[in-house]
Image (cartoon, rainbow, N blue to C red; front, side, top):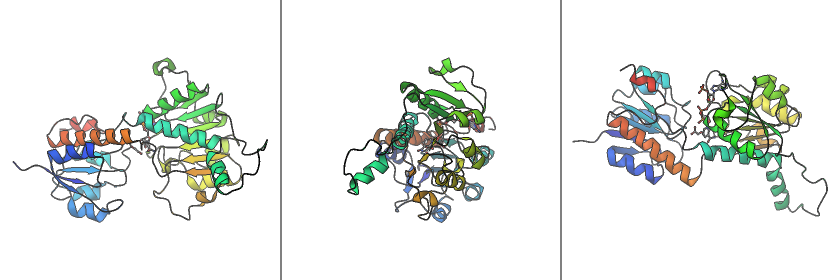
Length: 328
Ligand code: NAP
Ligand code: GLV
């Protein structure tokens, strides 16, 4: 029997690739960088499965070109690049990769926090530039992490992993979540829930872990930045559009807050004339928070297993729209 046709929009780690190859008649975009949208549109009409990445926008227009599509699997936990509601309406399950990347992403968010607090990039650049002449009592003074207050916005899988790390550093942990948090004991760490205003005003470090939704778009803008301490550090590993980057630029330039460390930007990749790039107190990484060898392999396998289940007509093990099964 012929295997179902699948489009994969980029070569993925071999552990996942072999699973997809084994269960499908696979077509892979082999070009450099992201697949152009017109190529997906051109190749999707006869495909039953789509294996995509967070760089691919999957919207109603594209779905209109995919009459045979039975499953979409993305190698990411965040599904803001997919019109999930529209997929549900069309009966298409969407697979994603929760949990396997939680700890690696929190590791990197904490690494950004520490790098910003202790000005590591500035200091390394200073040495490389041949400017290190002597030990100085005031050279690159940063902020202490231990016993500082961290504000966590979005208390899901990664937010909680951040709380566990912060607790190890003796930090006071404030949390903003849109639903009431039942009890901190449930998470094994002591946290103090509060409204966003309280978390903004009291935090030395503010770290963002919400999904991108209409509600969280520019959640941190001019007004919120003005509420923060002038010494505060903002860490964003969620999605670029959760922060209003123009307002952030002004706050960093004018001393409204001290530092920002960002793994995600609006848009990605950023334009080289992005004003934030000109600031010494802003670190920007190229969306690599989950990028450890082991985690990317696990993400590839999980996404491949989701795709395989969908092609076989089974329930996806990690489905972003489980309601799709209720409408069938
Ligand atoms: P998660 O477990 O779903 O956590 C997100 C939490 O935010 C949930 O508890 C959610 O509550 C809450 N939330 C939703 N809207 C909110 C709002 N308006 N205000 C406050 N809290 C809100 O997801 P996760 O696995 O921790 O991942 C979080 C996000 O991180 C992903 O969506 C993705 O965008 C990003 N991410 C980035 C990287 C990277 O490489 N930089 C890697 C992994 C993830 P409900 O469950 O009640 O909706
Ligand atoms: C990465 O950003 C993800 O959502 O997995």
